Length: 140
Image 1 (cartoon, rainbow, N blue to C red):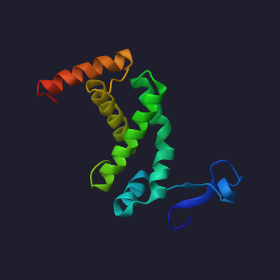
Image 2: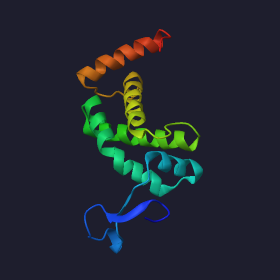
Image 3: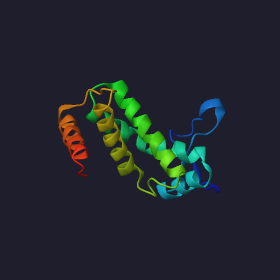
Image 4: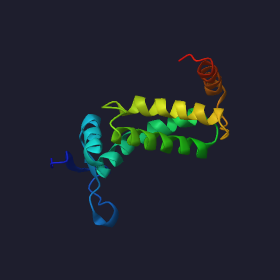
């Protein structure tokens, strides 16, 4: 294992990655990757967290809205907001997935409530409507 926590194992066996470089798996925990981002914006840490959590985040975003392109935008926005929060000393410390899913949920509700109309799925639309009503009423 090297000093970054990578094992040298490849994700897809011994095949070399782009430009002949090995595509290694970073085995650091989400907490260590988060600390690396907070301490200096480690691009490798950000990429590893994206690799780990993007499939679940995109799947959840697709369950929130009907348009696949909007779901991709939601997933990207969730990662961007989360990385920004971490760099600002906020955001998740170690549990990225639940934090990202919450960001997707709140972003979809905000987008549906604003001028950027999002075609929400029926179940998520019901939740977003009730969340918006609570916000307007001052409840949380």
